[in-house]
Image (cartoon, rainbow, N blue to C red; front, side, top):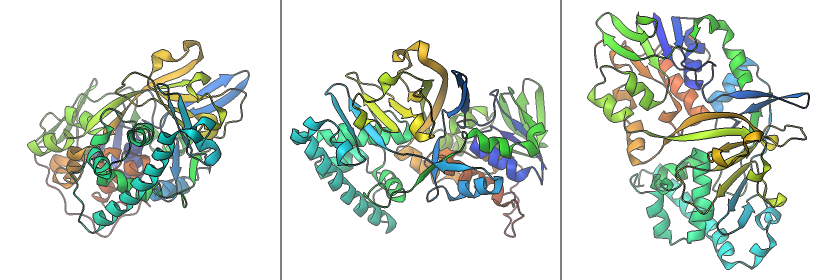
Length: 435
């Protein structure tokens, strides 16, 4: 079959990787590079070269099994990464890092702050309640409509817990709007935290990063179908026709037997010229948070106290901001040996010393609320209708493993699994009719 794949993020690449030996694929990419959020920047400073990630950075073997299997198949080298978290509240002067007692009380005056001790106690109380909610969820007894705000309110947790831990931590993980993060469904949040071992002080997963930058796995995956990728070729419209699926670019319309839309859900919806009611409802229910990622060497964005510095550093100023402000310390995350401190900061680009900026990118991240979670459960209603399929990390928690899983869901409908073999349980052919 002639198959069009729109987008070269992790989902589009996995689809192309698995389908190209069996079908005539064409991959469309609006950008001038392949990889989407897998975006490694080549930096040269003082005669030395560095490869620094600005989007996807880390994974762990426990929670990314399909991605790990893919890396193993490709023969991609990986290395351990340091995953620690800190908070800096510029309004109160608080700085702390949650690794051990020395970093937790990086500011020794926190030993005498009752509000700080209350926050630590509330973290333990929240984790215990979260484990109970996970158990209820597994038994089908949890109310999916309960938000984090309602969950925290019922536990009567302190404002310091919410403002100096829960919101910073959650907004950092999902690059979310801190002013609305508490709308996040409590069951979804606690399920994720439990799966990643984040409700316990022990048994945390070991995090890793791709040696030499995440782009290395893209370089290993792409060569067999590189001649089928059209860079700088944005798709303007997709329409289901009697003779197939029409894909329109600046080069004109082309007809394919099947089309895989592997961009964000809102982008895919905008491309569909004949989207049906279910597609509008499901794809339109998932909103996105825009974030600016700046690669730079301005060390003012690390905590002032060296003991509080972490690989992930969340900072709040006195103003209410509708985006997370998080600085990834790339020397720690990628084990970069350099006299320069490399950082990727989400948002606040206007406050970064422009003479220290190395690169800047715009990334959108899915927003998870009750409507989005409900929409995820309706994926099968639109998958394959009219010969169009939808792949993207937005079908899961928004991470690389979710992108791989969504691609596998699509490829199984073509009868192909992660090993690239034809499956025995091929789904029934989906009729090629308009949605």
